[in-house]
Length: 255
Image 1 (cartoon, rainbow, N blue to C red):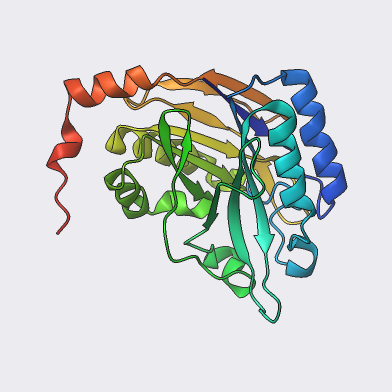
Image 2 (cartoon, one colour):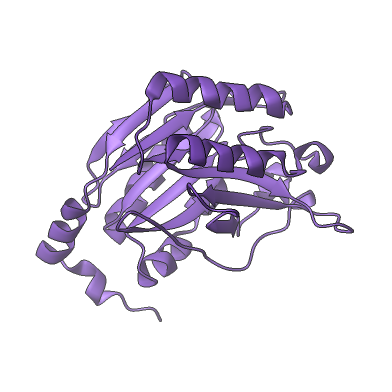
């Protein structure tokens, strides 16, 4: 199985432009049936606090489902949802699989980025989620969640083989992005597939650095700061062999 990490220079609050970017990269990459396509956090609008612009009226969910149906891939996307009458949105990872009428998984980002004022516009989710990609059990996470290892530990305790994360992680803390992703892979003996955006929004620059890491902490592939796609092979046998050879997870003690 292959994972395709779509590193986008997201057009600010312009959903149609971003749908076009994703389709263009898909045409260039030609992912195969059964593969996984991963998009950055809020790929359709960028990291905006304007929930009126960000909230999905159904078009982003429909786009993700159509992409899954057309490619035969599982599509790990992202969107903001806002229930009628609510003042705060949810920052969701939305996962669509071919042939399904509704997403197979929705995960609401548990940790809004208060330092960046996200908590003024978005409320945090309250639970983990998992989905199956082939024979891998995947636990989604979103951007700032990466700084909270307890979320990943709970995910692996619930059977995760891989963590898939979309982000808008600013370039000022790029070294943290790389280090924390590698740490999450090593400590949980799991694949980490992490997609960051690149380019600039009206407030911050982003250095990309999308990365895929195996359960031993080995780098499967990594992008620079330009828009593009990283395609990597994900082999569950690597995970099985490492967890068998070095069975550290059995010694987890939560106190």
